[in-house]
Length: 86
Image (cartoon, rainbow, N blue to C red):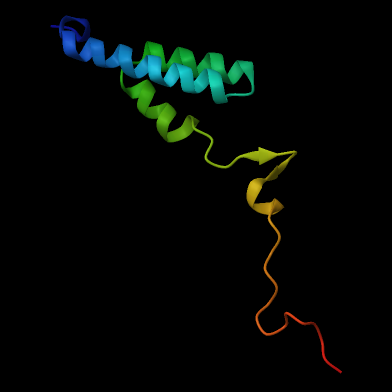
């Protein structure tokens, strides 16, 4: 009995691969990266999807070479909000 013989696993793989394919096509900015992730998700049942969820989803957005956290201003130090006093 192979993977394709079990109907529910096949349906689950197709549903998960379709869902992740939409995510890949919407969020991957580099075409080569998108094509390779699509190949992995569709050719390696369940493990390809797991690999994309763990390694492929961009959790930090990069803006102009800087990550989003670097663009937010730092809060002023405590006790020094008004500046130096004379």
